Image (cartoon, rainbow, N blue to C red; front, side, top):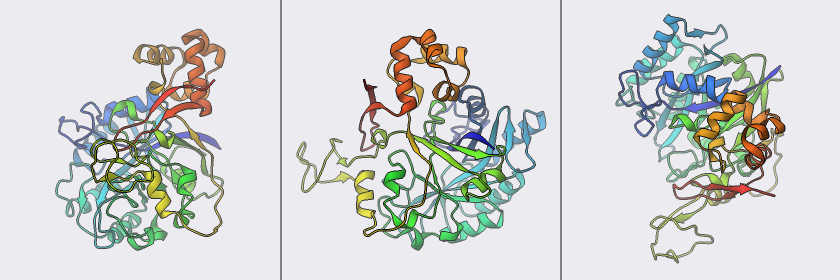
Length: 391
């Protein structure tokens, strides 16, 4: 059994004709570019690309397969160099049960299954070539279709204020919106962690996943997990999410929730953090707020005692380019000497790092590795930031 680094939520900005897929994503975030980045620079063993329902994205992937640069795996997934691609789709659900938009992630083992799903979805969205499209149907129907195709179903970034299971405008519980038995895991999102999510009883039966939701190349693997599997395939991933046959998530690596841009409640107008808010903003007088994930979870937390399941450690990390002193040139020097970002973050020897970038930056990298970087919290759509490593 080996540990594999996995990020299951990566967008595509443009298709092979440079037409938009995820409109808000970077133009250089193409399928080919992200596969190269994930394999050669990031060092990811498995990634989920969640815009694979788009026919032109599938067409580009098919071209890689025909050239031999991508290879379909017997147990599901497609191998590109050292990385396994898991075919995924992010969909926006807004039915009578949830009363507000929520995003969900659907994953499939093979190109054939994704094509079948894409053809089915095409009849229920406005533009099948775009990401995160509003789906005209019920969440239950979507879940059943995913399971008919032996797929995986995961609610996305479940605590963010917008377009999530517990977000703004959604008043129902998980069990009222979705078929609980057809959920394979839940995605925490950038502004929460395991300890926060564990406060909610109805989440206790689900595996927690931490993913980047990358909208640009550099954001790939800003959150990820290590998973114990025999090999990086769809079948093994499915077993790990179900915690079967010793396959399991061994650690979640995510940014400190204080870095998330929706962690704390802020004034809608001036974005000043607000605690114990009542009445108009004390800074500008504006009446409306953007409720932070921290306060939203406090509202949702389940009173009384209940048994919490054993979970893997949640390790606070940030991408290397968040670290003070690591700019593009320094990062390039590290990559040239050591290899991938996963090697630098997890395995590089302290003395080797000192010889490459000096003691000060090495101290920052080790603080990143150990989860001791000092954080200034974010909120209202503004990310927090790393200040410096603790002494």
